[in-house]
Image (cartoon, rainbow, N blue to C red):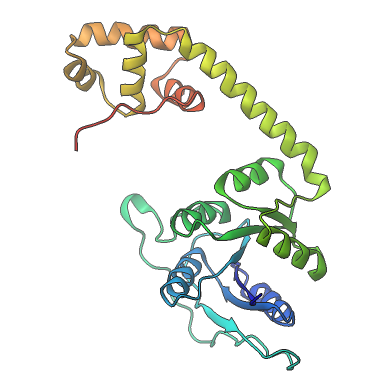
Length: 271
């Protein structure tokens, strides 16, 4: 079996480089480090293009937006050789962050490392992901699992524990610390309960009201719904009021959120 190719994505450069150096001491690990979500995504794309795709990504749960730090190349060494240091990122004058994109969104486009997991797994579905966290948070752990993560490891854990999880996810195992299990199960149970209640409320709607709700989920206004369903705006207004009343909410936004929990998708819009 070849070496496991690991990418460390952490906004704290010293931590990322230190962890990469420690992992490089493992005889079956090849490792690289990236200091931002953008740098991690570029590293994944570049490695895949070179037919040397990363197999595991270690992601800081709190990886934030900001200027992309340079990607630190993968560490390779023959068995039995001394451990090389991870190359330091050259120092120099600090660079301003790149300009924001549309609507003020940073090019990194994420609020935390879990959003990076969603994007990375969408492009690289075979990639295994482990979240590195400073605190055990059941809600975020559930988000990470739903995004495609296979493990959650506290940053204070030993290298041996981390490597056990790395090798475990390579066997398609899911690893959570015991301290998180009860909270994660509670979160999943609550989410299922909310979905079941939302589904029950949606089932109370008439077929026409469900059509209107799907239009609301698609973001259509009253006139657009009227044009699509060949109804008068007054009739659409009545249907929308009925939808809000039966769902027990007071705004279109709340109705859309409930609909999404119930699995209601938007109506298909013309291209």
